[in-house]
Image 1 (cartoon, rainbow, N blue to C red):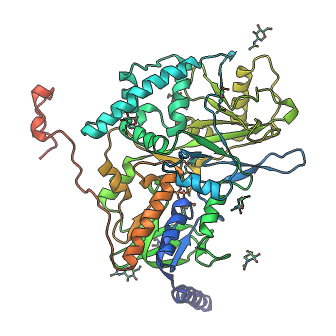
Image 2: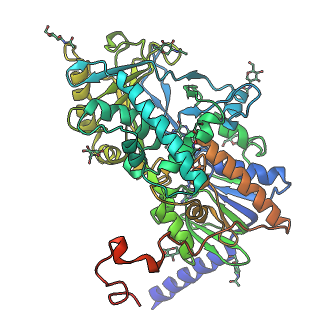
Length: 515
Ligand SMILES: Cc1cc2nc3c(=O)[nH]c(=O)nc-3n(C[C@H](O)[C@H](O)[C@H](O)COP(=O)(O)OP(=O)(O)OC[C@H]3O[C@@H](n4cnc5c(N)ncnc54)[C@H](O)[C@@H]3O)c2cc1C
Ligand SMILES: *[C@@H]1O[C@H](CO)[C@@H](O)[C@H](O)[C@H]1NC(C)=O
Ligand SMILES: *[C@@H]1O[C@H](CO)[C@@H](O)[C@H](O)[C@H]1NC(C)=O
Ligand SMILES: *[C@@H]1O[C@H](CO)[C@@H](O)[C@H](O)[C@H]1NC(C)=O
Ligand SMILES: *[C@@H]1O[C@H](CO)[C@@H](O)[C@H](O)[C@H]1NC(C)=O
Ligand SMILES: *[C@@H]1O[C@H](CO)[C@@H](O)[C@H](O)[C@H]1NC(C)=O
Ligand SMILES: *[C@@H]1O[C@H](CO)[C@@H](O)[C@H](O)[C@H]1NC(C)=O
Ligand SMILES: *[C@@H]1O[C@H](CO)[C@@H](O)[C@H](O)[C@H]1NC(C)=O
Ligand SMILES: *[C@@H]1O[C@H](CO)[C@@H](O)[C@H](O)[C@H]1NC(C)=O
């Protein structure tokens, strides 16, 4: 009896405590402190809306712009390497538009070097093997594909896969593994998916809007403060040191919304109520149900989330004794054509090269998509054995030394990322993407994946964060303009066209499973 009473009192006390504690109140809850969230809050602040809270899973700002310390230099000081975003992609021309990320990289003095894609040595399983002539063949095919994509867009034609565009151009790598490696380097290395899983129209839109609008240069950031220095710099243009509006180490678990507000519940039991929320969680996080929406998101929104793809891009870092470097340091890139498996440890980058981290002994190799999932599910030792096996094929008459450091991130398994960046599958539409992008009442969405043009790139997260921040600031001030959404997406074939003339010979259309 005594025990039971005490149990009840304790339970009652806990319940009252929780109720009395209440939720922290704010006008706008910004969910995520990656580039999109930081820019959204900056727009709010610029518009005079200072009553916001930023909730972030990790212990630091930056999201998918993340670095780690790796290996060490001759004095025993660790190097910094980027695990996520690494390049400013598309810079700008004098007098032309400049990539806002390039503007910021310069403002925060980020150390960076031009990536020279012509500085490449090619290998097969029997060592160095010059197949660089295939690069020109691919680029000729690409010129056809980009023009064809222009017709798809301007004539309103059906989108197809990038693979179909390449095939029509005459580029058919088939079992030529050197051609497969070249294709991987030119396509998969950027989109994190093979051509058959990518939209022809929107892969080209993505390329054109960055590399033709700004410039075709990619600059690799090797700043030892970390690439996210520029995101922190942006955040502290409006946050004060130790600003209580930034809630780090805060894992959002539930987002409950209605016509008058949004409630955010966190894993630590804390909660926030807001008039509006801006959710900047990645497409992977949205797809994996890591966060519960209550009520469930409307069907048009769920379709938008389910339609697009989240890619994974895995950089695997090795440090060798600097005096035992066995590769030719004059090349920035090494391209390996595996004899059996497309995408098997294909692109290698030397950081022990002039303009990067000379003397570091650091080399890294990148895999994407299905090979990322395989590698990310392996132990470090299993992956290291494979990687050293490939290096032995590339340098058959060389003793490959044991690396002194080895590390790779597992992006597909991070509960706050669930992959690296988004991509458009073949055959989707701008309207379907708008469903991924649009607000659901007081709940707004921003991030790399909500950009129809720059998707994947930092400039996507930057522009979308700013746009949504401005829209929500207008809402707070009573001049809200909701974003458009498309609940009824129609295909191009009408029911009347299901006829024998179109090869529809079983007259099942009206009699089976369709009323
Ligand atoms: C391996 C890799 C390589 C890349 N390379 C490049 C490149 O070279 N150039 C380039 O331009 N772009 C590159 N990108 C893409 C670039 O990093 C992204 O476009 C950009 O950082 C996305 O910013 P975001 O704000 O949309 O999302 P994020 O950075 O993911 O921000 C979302 C934030 O939400 C937080 N969050 C998630 N879930 C929760 C939760 N439940 N509770 C609280 N917080 C949560 C996350 O921790 C994160 O901080 C790369 C990305 C990766 C991963
Ligand atoms: C960048 O470098 C310039 C010139 O050295 C200096 O004036 C400026 O303060 C630096 N800016 C930052 C943000 O470090
Ligand atoms: C890029 O590398 C190629 C091959 O090494 C070289 O000929 C060219 O001059 C380099 N370009 C630049 C801009 O450094
Ligand atoms: C490796 O050594 C063998 C035997 O000397 C030689 O035939 C071969 O060409 C060498 N391979 C490379 C890639 O140097
Ligand atoms: C991309 O740019 C090329 C070259 O300017 C152009 O021919 C093509 O139409 C563009 N395609 C799209 C989809 O913008
Ligand atoms: C901010 O917090 C850190 C520790 O978290 C402390 O060292 C620092 O003095 C604080 N700065 C200010 C301005 O309060
Ligand atoms: C959060 O969502 C989970 C899963 O739907 C549910 O079990 C839980 O009750 C929710 N919590 C809150 C505080 O809404
Ligand atoms: C709407 O949500 C807010 C914030 O969670 C809550 O305070 C309010 O009671 C809800 N209103 C209705 C009608 O459910
Ligand atoms: C990944 O796909 C390629 C074809 O693009 C295939 O050759 C390879 O075996 C696949 N890898 C895995 C792990 O399935």
